[in-house]
Image (cartoon, rainbow, N blue to C red):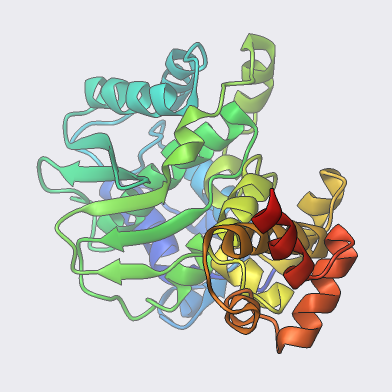
Length: 346
């Protein structure tokens, strides 16, 4: 039997999603065994809440179920969404000028396909919230189907938007309207953000600046993508067009808070490898941006406040006044005191 490649990190997809696919087959009187055999999903694994599957296995099974059942929402809603339904949503969104408009269109047109759920986009205090509201009972095919549905619809909407603007949209947090399942530990790994349960509705939240990113895809690219669209749901988009911009904003707001790359990556909700890759693509480095932010803050504090140099050094994360003075001289060619004296006589 051929081996299914993991396609990346340690498998994280819970058995509940595969049970949901099995329940959808059962509701239609169909046998899921041939599909699961191809994906190397065993009955023992399905019954084990601790079992985890790869993204490649989910991609194979979800795509197979959608085609076999001619339903791109297998068992989720009160009526089928025939094969090609989500392609229609993508076509409606590709002419949008930006990510925010594309997401709003996707939500409006999804409601035309099925009024079982409603998708709303709102912005509050710099955060965008994509909320999925259940208008009637979801998952009539079985108890795991609702969970699979809520996760998949939100990932589909955000995944398509990432593709449209050619940028990863990292989540700040996610929430779901059910109690923590036995496999709750899988959710932060799948979404790479803090996840809460028992919320009023399912919701993904992210930096609202991503809504302004321009759509970059055309009809030819759309046709190619629709030939194999499942990766947009089960894999995170790699390229983040705003990562360096978010890093600059973070360092400007907190110039003295980060001593290690691990701390910066965690604050940006990304990996160290991804952080350094994006910085290299921009022709810069983390140290350069940290120095840039510290210098700007130092000039501001020295020029607009009467704080002693020792306090300025501490505010910028330096171990002491001497190390700050050395860095400041390397940046400007003069000491902090000389800089202040020069300003005073101008």
